[in-house]
Amino acid sequence: MEQLFEIIHEDDDLLVVNKPAGLVCHPTKGDVYSSLISRARLHVGPNILPHLINRLDRETSGVVLVAKNPDAAKSLGKIWELRLAQKEYWAIVHGSVAAERDTITAPLGRDPDSKVAIKDRVVTEGAAARTDFTVRTHFTREEGQFTWLQVIPHTGRKHQIRIHLAHIGHPIVGDKLYGGDEDLYLALVEDRLTPEQRRRLILPHHALHARNVTFVWRGREFSFHAEPEPWFHDFLGTIMEAKMEARL
Image (tube, helix red, strand yellow):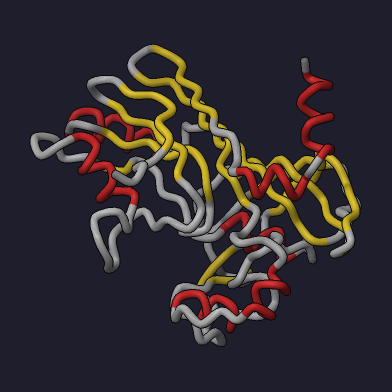
């Protein structure tokens, strides 16, 4: 049987998984392996109705919480609704980000000029959004200059991190929707990406990973951590290894 997902934590109330890049959270079409929630149903069995507490974009990997009963779903959902969960992401972006740390507060709303119905952008009268970032390191490869960022979103707007980083001139590597050519996204969903388009994207998925989630629930602090997939590690190469060793 195909592996459903990497399990980070599981108890009677909660399942925490490391969602792989390329997997949608909710079913659109396809078999029982085609979405995270359908895989969760397979894992917990027919007597449990799982409920996703947080969601990630199709191409974003990382920590996702799945409640295993209505009480857990309600109480955990409230934590997310009140923005009481602290979330940390890793992103690799194009270019050399000048500020070592900064806050982006550009408001977000629908992009009426886009052919893609789900695409948003920075709009003056949009919903308030705040994203903090810190540079972990700058590096250069044959494909160009890049920056590895730690990103902390304080609001949970759709595509918030991706839009904000593109807005300051540093789109996420591999982002098919906000990387400058939205036809790459249309080609992805229509399953017509060419080898040349894949080469331009550099990476098989966009380089955004939900690395850590921390929150207080039922009087206890919970913190769940997930490592990015091998292709993310490989793109950083020895830089990531050196950073990890420096923390030991």
